[in-house]
Image 1: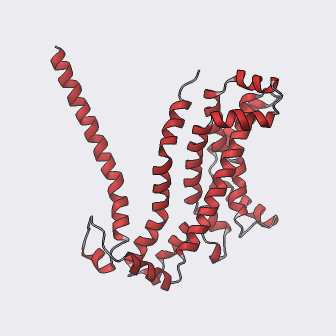
Image 2: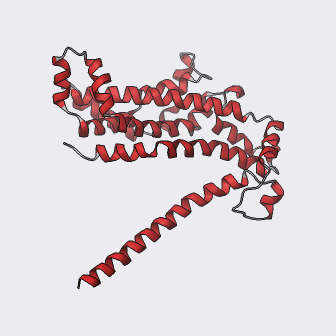
Image 3: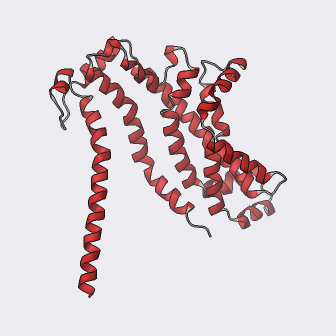
Length: 281
């Protein structure tokens, strides 16, 4: 009986791992082909699929430069926006969520219900009014229009509230007050170190979202020297790149590889953040 149970368990485990390996390959192979094609020439790409890199990366990059596509500038623009957006999102979302979780005040339930409603409303529904507002205050064609709205990110506040509720230790807050620490001091010196895994998790998602933000940037940014990397990649669809497949793949890879690197560097914080947030003392 025990042998049959062990055999059934091993068979089940084998199929589970097999499915996971298949899903892993389905995820990795398209990305790998994208990176490989970025190193191949147009003729090589037209000849068929290859899993091995080639030697035409520099040539493809020169093609992009000759067509007026400034990848370093686009990379710098996207990286600056993503970093600032991440910092603003994490700090103010954690601060707002801390205020909701740590204090009891009139209208608290209404405020949180309002935040939940905002989570369910797509940004596209309010983009016309948002654009008109940015024009009136003079922030159109400015990075501020892409960064400052992240101060009031409803989705991030919702995530932070759920996380802080699972790790909040009221005794530590009371001890900080007894020691004479200010309310902001308690947040900075006590809560933020405790909530670091959740902050890193939110930071990764905020960075990826800001890096991939094409819709808002396309609506608000008009100067070509301010184009983000996704906006520059979108220009690869033009006629001047119709037969430059290697250059197109290089531009696409340039927008994807940084996200992959960031994820691999900080993925362990995602696991820690989810694990710690799932356990309530």
